[in-house]
Length: 112
Image (cartoon, rainbow, N blue to C red; front, side, top):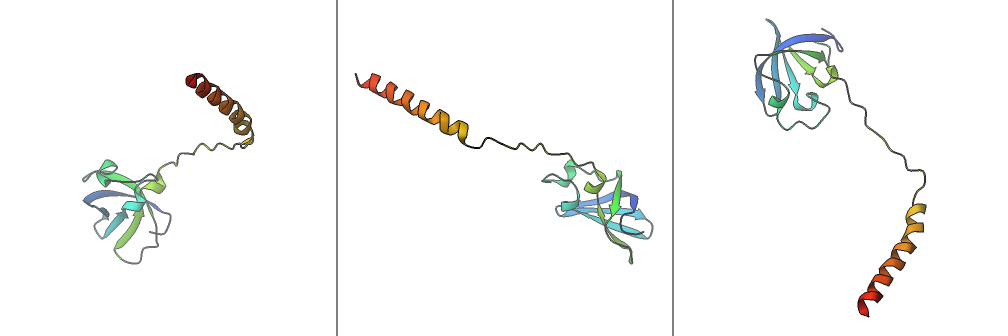
């Protein structure tokens, strides 16, 4: 196995910090909680289930029987909507004087 390879593995144990997996008879792996999802992960159980098989990406070249894996790199990342304001504060500045006048008129009417 090399970095970037995709492997199937079964979840054997889930801990608060990550999930342990079995790739084959000689190779185990760990999916750290930071490699489970692109979103904040409160509980790994919300994403992975013990006894289920998933596809993972290998994060390092394998020299020993332990492998670092990623589940989130197998998932499509949602694009964020970005809004760029091109007018700045000009509309606010223009409306501010109207709001102040309206407020002053309302207060003067209340005082009468």
